[in-house]
Length: 96
Image (tube, rainbow, N blue to C red; front, side):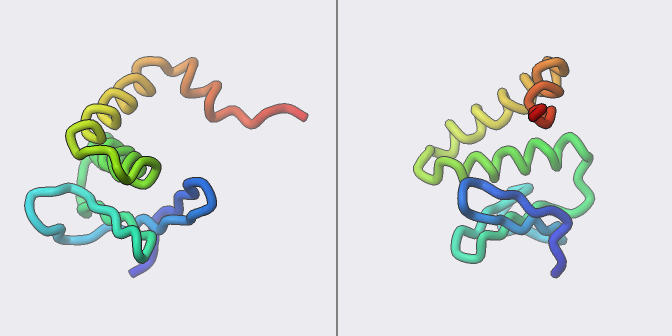
């Protein structure tokens, strides 16, 4: 399956793929051994983005508990959406 996105986290590169099914009622999952993030195909763009942030949070802090990951990623997504000036500043390439 071909990755629709690649995400670099520290020294590691993760492939992000869309899949038809994930075990349980999850919308996404991370496989640390293959460095793959899977998200359900067909999600609304905002739901997919929030799911990606959730899985990226797992990659950044693998020992963080599920509830803490959920709270952090939801709040981060909300903060980035509500503070577009900050988001644009974060994404702006530094001038040399």
